[in-house]
Image (cartoon, rainbow, N blue to C red; front, side, top):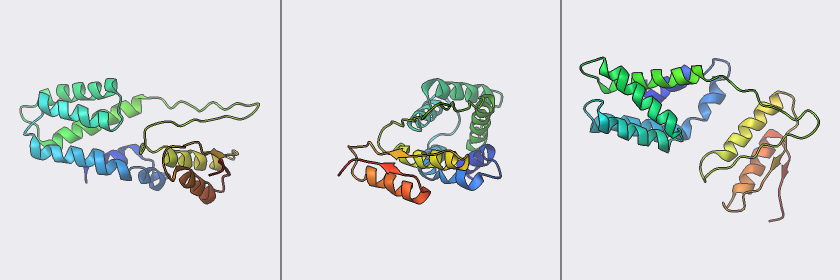
Length: 179
C-alpha cells in the first residue's frame, strides 16, 4: 500500500470513502509521486531529506508552520532510532499528519439565518476551486440547502463552461454573463 493510500485510509470514514477518495486523484500524482521519488535519492532522514520534504509539503499547499512542524516531529521521531528506512520515515510522516488532523477540531460553517450565505473560492489555476465548488454544492444539497453557482472566472478559457456543467450535473443553477 502506497503512502498516499495509507493516508487516505487513515483519514476517511467508511460511509463517505468513495466521495472522499475521488478528490485525491490529482494530489496522488504529485504529492505521492514526489515522496516516492525521495526513496531513490536519500539513504536516511537527514537535513537534506527534511528540506526536500518541506518543499514537497509546501508545493502541496501545506502551510509553512505546519510543514516545519511536521519536519521537526519527523526529526524527533527518527532520532530515536539508529537507522531509518524510507518505509519507516513515511510511517512517521503519516503518523505525524494524522496526529495533526485528529488534534484539529472541525469548525462548523456559519450560515446567515436571515438571507443568503456566500462562499467565495479563490486561488491559482489548477488548485481545485471548481471541483471544490461542486463538492460543497453536493454537501449543501444533501443537507437540504438551496445552492447556486456564480461563474466569475474571466481568465481561464472554459472555466465558466466547466462550472456550468457541474451545475447541470448537480441540478444547481449557474449564474453567468453573456459570453
